[in-house]
Length: 79
Image (cartoon, rainbow, N blue to C red; front, side):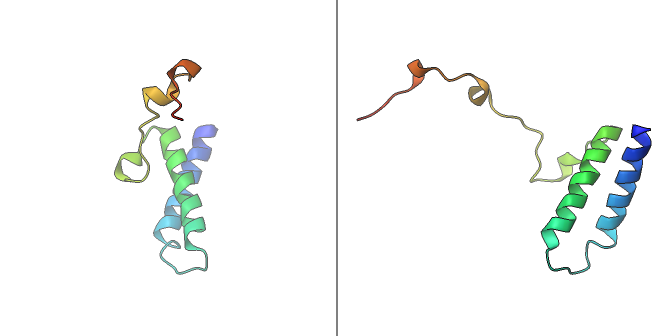
């Protein structure tokens, strides 16, 4: 059932991006942004990773340094 909902979400959001997306509207980034997010989440759930073609959505996570817990020993305070 979840797979069918993901297909329905991907199809409808994809059709919106292809047809209603180019039509000018007062707040252009909200509509297309939400449709793109729904489309990417649905296709990712179905097993197709389309984020590699979008330069502003990378699969890279945080660096190792940012994931490590911060100790007070590593902090240098200049006075």
